[in-house]
Image (spheres, rainbow, N blue to C red):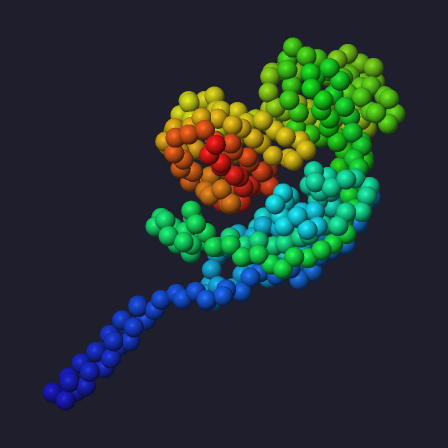
Length: 343
């Protein structure tokens, strides 16, 4: 029995030793992590008749030498511009099948490249890798690791969109039909003192309203309030909607703190971004829609997620640019990215 006891004790010590060694296993990053790649680029001669088709960019994940979580950004720029003024196509946590419809991609490319012409475009897949958070060291949320694929060059042709111009709204603005099917949409700034009509510049037909519906040569449309709206019009069934769509800053760093009204941002149609230059104090901020919490973005500038944490700022004057990549994102999903620049 004594020998058996000694033998079992010896076995237990060996198990404890191996357990300790396992507990001390450390993650080691490769000296030269393997960057993501773009394996295939779809045909980028975009056609309105194929607007509902889905394009797929196929990539591979970054490999730092261990299982890592990363966010991927598919970006494009004019050939040779070194992505100094890049346009974001989409972002995802899975690079193996990056999907976007022809009409959505066309709308994005129209912000950067001329319509109905062939443009030479550089495309890359950029990965942002956060190893740990909260320490302030390289690889944390404030100083993430970034690795980009080799540049792929492609010929891109985008199609111009049919549009309706807002006449009388006080500023030059329009709504567009992504599929050329009589359904128009856009984010517009309205003033309830400025009634407006919708003019088709191709046919010179002017739409107003009668009985709450669109009507050719109808009375001017009067906005219900001031601010930014998602305006949708259908010239086939003669319907239209105006839904408030105002993005603002909220948080302890803003003038009203966590209370409404938020500090409103302005929409730039050409770039598809929301922008503001404003003074902030030491504290935190988030982005949210229409002064409510139904849809809000937080997290880190490169990866804004619905219902994620607040972004910390120090006192100063800032220029903030927000790109919403997925307006239909839900809790836990990536909804956009931003730049926060201290002036």
